[in-house]
Structures are given as C-alpha cells and as structure tokens.
Image (cartoon, rainbow, N blue to C red; front, side, top):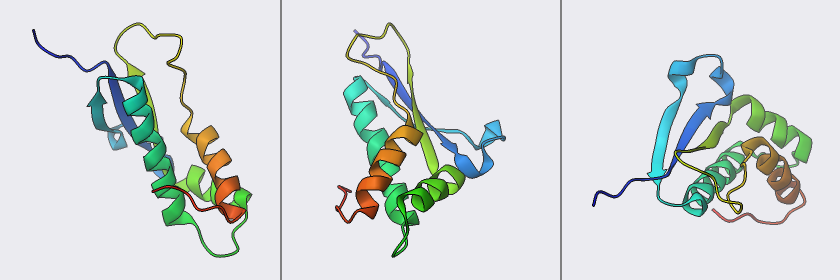
Length: 107
C-alpha cells in the first residue's frame, strides 16, 4: 500500500506576499506534529536571522512580518481534534517576546 503524506508545509514570503508565484512547498509530512515542528523551527530561524542587539519584541515582530518567511500547514484530509490551526505570525509574536527578554531560543 502506498504511503500518503497528510500534511504539506507551504512557505510564503512576507515581503512579496502579493505574488503567488513566490510561494513554495517546504515539505510533506505524515503527522501534524512533524509539520508543526518544521514550521516552528523555520519561524525561529527567521527571528534569529532578523534579530539585532537591543531590538524590542515589537521591532523584531515587525521585521518578521515584513521580511520573514511564513510557513503554513495544509491538511489533505480530516483534521483531528489535536491538530489545530498554526499561525506563524502568532508564534513569531510570542517567540519575539521571549527572544528580546534575553531567553535563548532553540534552533
């Protein structure tokens, strides 16, 4: 029996969000958790790349929403109760606060 991935992680570029041809597929995953972990890691990598010394959480979040890569998860079947809606922007806002308060983030 052929194995089918249930979740696709797409990446949009916040800087050129109006151009649909800028979207690309990051990968396909069997579980929501795997897709979520990849998406979160991408957001953190973007925040780490955009962070400057003495930057506030709001400044970092604004830099992310302007220039960062925005992963989103597409489910190819029914969604289970534990498979929520991931918002890269919400996660970035939360993580920017942590980063700018001096707490190191996982890479």
